[in-house]
Image 1 (cartoon, rainbow, N blue to C red):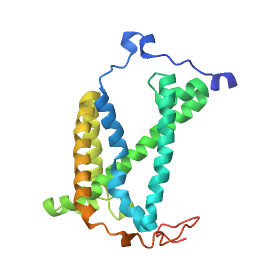
Image 2: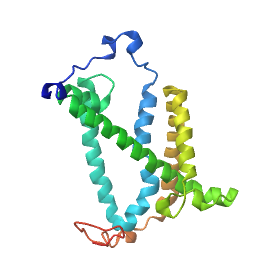
Image 3: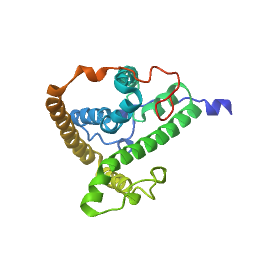
Image 4: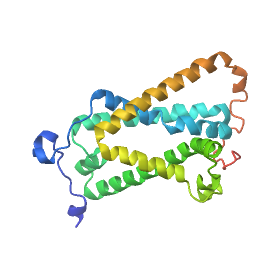
Length: 225
């Protein structure tokens, strides 16, 4: 039983599989770069900076530095493993080849749960921007654009945007990646315009105090230790 749970499996490249069992290579390097940039410069930079600054003040910059260092280490590890094991499956395949089937099973389901959580968080973040516009333009009640945790009934805009994105993915990988590349360009241009317009008004005095709540070991939801 132990041998079965922890048995490993050799990783085969695409060329080692029968043609009908291979994933079609439909993405070019610009698509892959856009996917990476889109994942990095995502909803968090548009919705969570204000939340983080409200709890940590300017010291939130340190959080981005630490997160960037961790992400760089993870990216290098993935790059190394992907060159050693050039096969689809990501962390699931790597775990299966090195640690065994049961570990790979846990990693695979963890990835599914992680992506489900990320998708819901991104959708709610997008809805936070869309809700005021829909209320002012179409008179949609706020109760229908927020979940029970935010004194609402159901977050319809979040559900709709998930359905739209899922539909785009069903059209094809290349088509959805092409649309993503266009959206990434728009996002980068918007951020560049924001920096260009806001930079002349930069005031270093706003960084004082740098850590208004200190560097507490544990911080509650309202930013108090």
